[in-house]
Image (tube, rainbow, N blue to C red; front, side, top):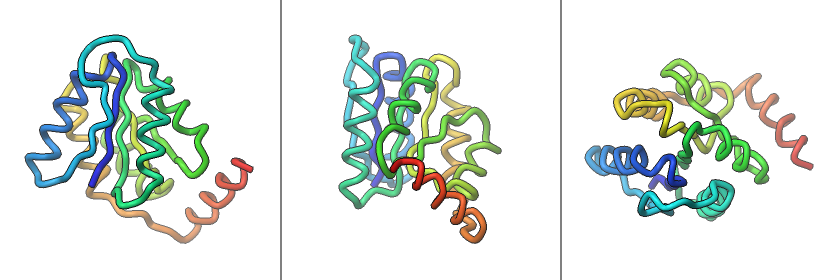
Length: 144
């Protein structure tokens, strides 16, 4: 299962991504927003990350206008490693090296086809562990 949420700036892209995920057989927990009315991205980040931390999710997706604000908010939450994606290479590498558990998109800067390509790259990659785990452990220490 995948958990997803967006503010008003990411609403349209969120709808596209939810439809795509369901079309490939993924279960999706949609935390909103459910229309284009203005909402605050920190609230969405908090809700999606709290839901993810309950367990049972492959990963989470956050979307705001640029992806910047919502990813910053998510990374303030202990245990969350949120990566703002900008191409398929970064999508692949954040899974392989950072084992990111939340990915973010900018709904006003990334088109649907590009977002789906990045999502596919992320989902097909696997965490490499090894020296990368040591680095993730150091990042986790920074939360304390």
